[in-house]
Figure 1: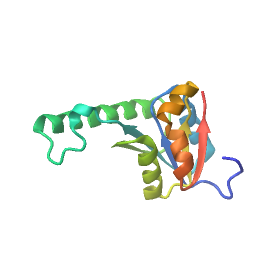
Figure 2: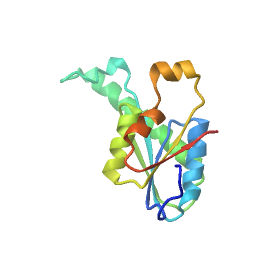
Figure 3: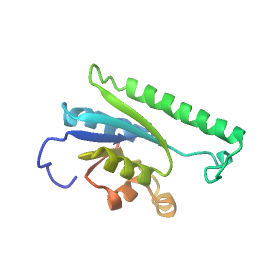
Figure 4: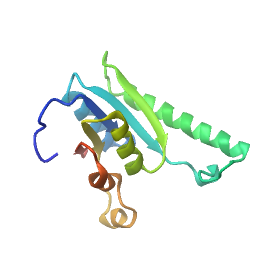
Length: 150
């Protein structure tokens, strides 16, 4: 964010990869707008062995997808539970895919006013080679974007 918001945020999407930067982002989101609806989103990547692009994946691959989704949901539950949200109602969503794409699409779907994301301090070479979710979101965000660092 480069400027103050024009109105109080009503819908905040908190994207997390469970890193210290994500924890800081979640802490900021919880304080930013106490009356806002908060949605915690974790984007997980399918192992190559799951055959994401297979039109009819083998039964073993479907089971691997289900297990990966279950692990992602359990990790998100632990992360959110560890934040001490108290009585505040929050939603939890897990989706497979590329983080910048999934986060941007989900923000559109929920009509988010603000996306809050942690920015890791990655080596510049690694970031240049592989990109980053933050950089991808900066190009496609449909709303305000707040980046937190640990």
